[in-house]
Image 1 (cartoon, rainbow, N blue to C red):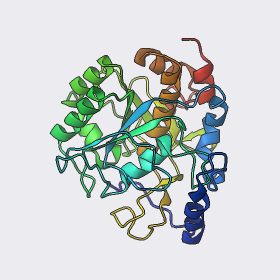
Image 2 (image 1 turned 120 degrees about the vertical axis):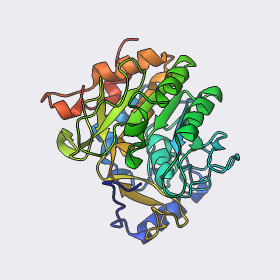
Image 3 (image 1 turned 45 degrees about the vertical axis):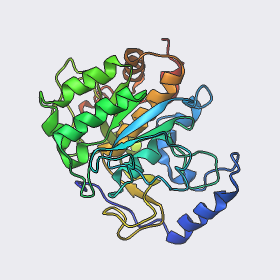
Length: 321
């Protein structure tokens, strides 16, 4: 992992620590102290969308490196997951990437702790398929997708672009049938485009998957983001603040505050997964969810690297079924 991604240590540990303490009382109406640093929430109009739906009772499977199951901003957000690396039911994150992705998708919101998640009412299903070094096998990733679909995932997030796995595996590879099977079971599959800065079509055209590239401030494409996948959309993926393990991992060697910023299409994908969760709560089918997200994405400058455009959560939840 780590390709074109950086952890920001600009967040003062003292500030993060104070945030962890602030919410100990469990006041659900207390604003998240780091909310002002989450530029992406405003950029894709998630707060406006929350007036309509917060994704209650929706399960987002994060097929990744696992999660910090005891993180103060993630506790209570999980349903049962699985670890295909160690073959057990304890998908504890030994890398950090999966914890970051999980926070973007559905960290506890308005609990007086840290950050806000993209889908405040959704639950996270941690499925560990990548090890401490961020690597994983074709077989485990495929098993993770199918397991998530079989165990009730409504949305499946594949932020695998950082390791190069997504590009390798989806060039007509073994993940295509797994994605198709998950879709057939009723799950929306969202996948990061990857961070090589190249034109790339890793998916068979008929594969039912939402490919997500990364955008930065001012609605510009991120220079590291892959593009060219059919019907791809974009979402914020630059300087994205989210949860990190509160213990030492590969991603937290210099920062165990529980929070930090990362760059990558891996950060963009869970924002789209969050929007998918909001739409699922409205009773939409996977096909209807993908259509709503794609048809309402905005790209006024017609920039090819943004694909169909940057997702607009407010417009998506207001669109007709």
